[in-house]
Image (cartoon, rainbow, N blue to C red; front, side, top):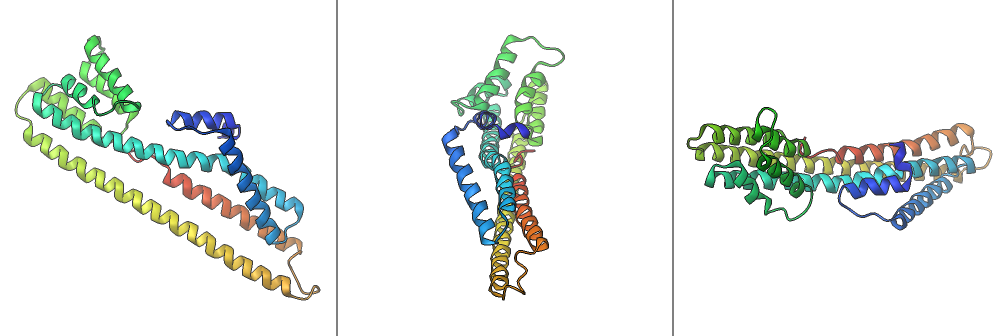
Length: 262
């Protein structure tokens, strides 16, 4: 996590997700976040050193927020890839009942990207024919490690059973297709729930911020001998409030960026 404070490390991490990220864009994000922090500090009449503290907190939180945004897009792409893979793999296997042929046929869907690469490794492993205990299991585990979805393991296990023992597989594949469809729908519903929860959390933060600003304006309008705006306790609590808002926002973004397929 601390390595992300170096822009170069953040850029490499985002590049590993398959997206480009420039230092110019990072500087823009950093300038905006620090400006917002300074604006909030001035709005709440904080001392200059407390404003600097809030600005530092925003700058420290920025890399994780940026990474969470790209990771959300990456996880969505992972889910779409493995969903398409499971569908096409089952359809292709039903035609020829050969794992290698099904892999080659399914790989044509993915002209580039991570799925294209790991499927190529699995195909090469099978064609090489060198294995430790079970050829197809070891080959398909290459894909399973890259896409750790339980449904994927079940599908691979069924395909290996049919490949080894033969027999009719139409009914079994139809059941697996139905199960996969239910799984995909549940994943999408979960993500919609997460997005709705994030929206509610952000809305709550905005509402509490507006209320805090209103109360602060009331306190500032009081005669100087009665105002508590510059009292050390008020300054400390206001700073803590802003820091907690930043922490809550980061927490919400990390939750929504978790793996879609695990």
